[in-house]
Image 1 (cartoon, rainbow, N blue to C red):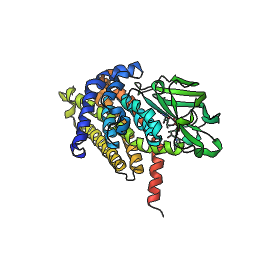
Image 2: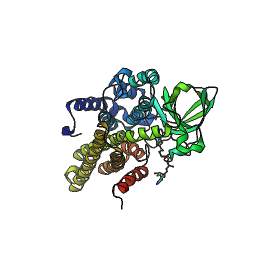
Image 3: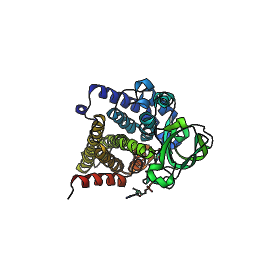
Image 4: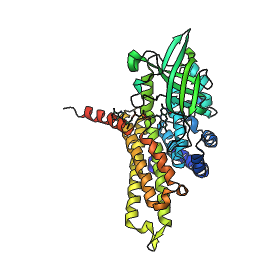
Length: 384
Ligand SMILES: Cc1cc2nc3c(=O)[nH]c(=O)nc-3n(C[C@H](O)[C@H](O)[C@H](O)COP(=O)(O)OP(=O)(O)OC[C@H]3O[C@@H](n4cnc5c(N)ncnc54)[C@H](O)[C@@H]3O)c2cc1C
């Protein structure tokens, strides 16, 4: 992040998280990827720095900050280990923020402090086997009986579910009402009829846990309904709109990691009697990579700044998510090219960055979905 865009406190946060990434996340990243399981060491490190509660009110144990601060943290964590950043984002800007934004006072006092402190992890379950981009088509039902809700159905690709203390779950009380039938519930760890099946074999982000979640008549007491019945879909969309900014920041971090690896390698590797960094073709590739990372970072911080100032930000958030996710896939691929054959092997680390990057154009709204949002806004701006 260029210094001119950050104030002193933001620079301190950036330096703190960057140091943590250099000392802890980067040295562990390859083993975490190969182990393909949630890293409690990484999680506890993020919790120690207060990253698990950024932007949540201090009365619930949160750390002061807005989307700019969360973006700075997500970029630096993403630069260190993308899987750690997706874990943090699912916990903070999806799960915990939904409870913080839409929960009542009793719920916030009961649920948030352990999540903010990082002694508990949050998950957020919207996607199902039959509905991802078309989230309003979800099929998981909530039925009211004897004063409680009972959930039946299944969710797919849910980050953190395996380790979550609390999971926000979207289910419909009335399928005939479409998106208006959907409500948001908090399901605690160990609830009866809650079955969590870790999904293995991910291409990247292997240090994050992704699960299928099944509900077999899982009881949810009325005090775990978030907000009002029938408003869950709107809550989910509002949360995704903002969280997109944080995914964009994660992508900037992934792109930055790829760029740094490529620059370092280009200065060491010699061909035809000189470092490859002295060949203009390589210089141009590095220049393109740096320009793309910078452009994505500016878009991301613009969206975060608009959001923090209460200004319209939806278009900017979708643009940032689209540009930053496509950027990090391309920059990671170029980093492999700069490495030549070495880049194709695990040792260099860039193939992991590439595999991690590939998920980002898919989750929290695919690139196609971002284009739909942006196109809608552009067409509305210039009516005939
Ligand atoms: C690593 C990982 C972690 C995840 N974590 C979570 C999580 O914590 N919680 C959660 O709820 N979900 C999570 N997801 C799910 C993710 O959000 C969905 O995979 C994503 O929204 C896409 O949905 P889908 O997979 O059903 O694809 P589909 O919606 O079936 O899309 C398939 C293809 O069709 C395209 N497409 C669909 N509709 C249109 C359209 N109208 N116009 C043009 N193109 C279209 C898509 O862009 C895509 O290319 C995660 C996914 C991954 C990979």
